[in-house]
Length: 284
Image (cartoon, rainbow, N blue to C red; front, side, top):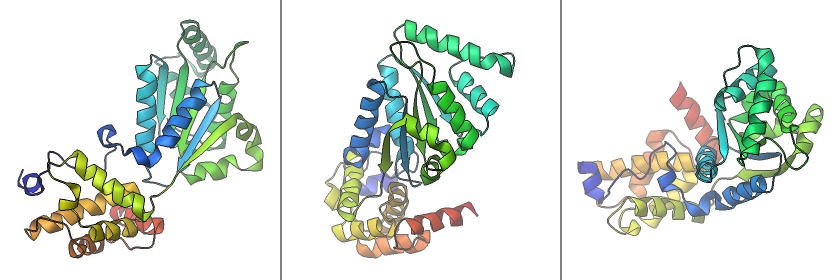
């Protein structure tokens, strides 16, 4: 395509869809490795929280892929529904079970987890957008984490969620599940230096030329600051800046193109709140 050829790209460097092939090692490698360690050590519940767009879904996919490749029994619950029965039905479904009635779910699931454990496979439940579970859903997760043999937990859980998940777990009435969460991690926005490295890395993965030949350092700093360091927002404005440079037949993205991209996106350079305003604007 002309756009890709113009910059010497072999593919799109700034897509909004999480892409395991473009994982930036500096981004949350420590969170990924720590979460893996916690599960391998047998911890009952691990929590990873962060603002929208900070890379939680990509981490979630990388973690699941890692455990699946090791032969573990991994179930993924995305956008869960609140409530005891809704949560139980969702968990059973993701483990490939089809109970006839709600009363059959718990014994059927317990038996399945026992079988997996006996076969040497570690059952792991990964929940994305876990704040949607609500109080009853989280309490259901806690009850499931009670299942165990004399030697190990029958089910380990990794919760990924927005800051609302932290606030929910911190409530007094949620102290029982809070005590079960033995490891908690947070995905944070980039500072300017890390954000610049992030842009360079994405370009390097999709380019036949040097990253500095595509974006000037000044342009990258404008984009990172305007996006509040949020990776998803950086992707959006960086892509628009490339389009602005392409439309101007410029071989590089300069500050002028970056500022135009920020203005066109409706993103203001005041941190994560700017990205949130942009999200509401696009949804409207």
